[in-house]
Image 1: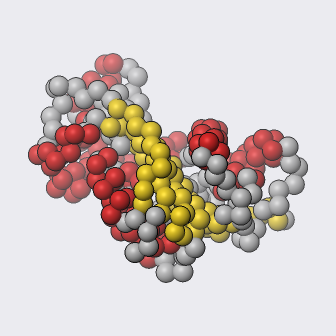
Image 2 (image 1 turned 135 degrees about the horizontal axis):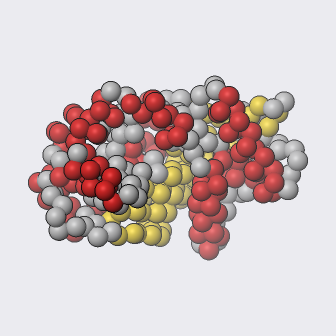
Length: 285
């Protein structure tokens, strides 16, 4: 989130430990579930068009591809866009899905469909049957991807603001390496900032690994792993991926910010705040 009021921002940053603890340990997120966790499908659509443009520049397309989106939350927007751009099938995998059977979610579901109909000028969508998603084209799996044994022959993998919330990053990248085809592609948009207050994107650097993991973040409650750029790059390389292109956004690291010894090995790229990277699977395990 972003705190715009300077006075509130000062208080928010000064007392971030108790606020983070209350939020993660007492599950206060449930009080604001819809507000904090609802996807903005218009922003997702804008991101998809950015990725599509990048693919076109590299003479790549989604035509005939079996695609996998990891961590779609409560949105099917990317799946719809992939199918409308000739993808063969989309598999959605989410360990902690935000899709709930509520009136608000049903309204959101219909809004996304209306948005797609208008965008592509189609009254009838081939992946919707009797008002429901046709699993021949879109399959949703509510599991940890590392625990799924039947996934294979994936052509394209997509994540948007997901990898920073994954606890077992190494295992997930290793799994993606096993399920994606040789020469398959994957695009990851990773937000490496402290999501607590985007005005101070590296505030969480001051905490040790033990303090952070035990008291200030919790899996399933907007967990943030604090994995840095260098480690992501090393893991992608280790598991057989080559960078095709990447876009990096760096942010100022205030001199007043404390930095835990835990981050001593990441000083070279410690100010990387956002990353968009397209990778290609170049070798099998």
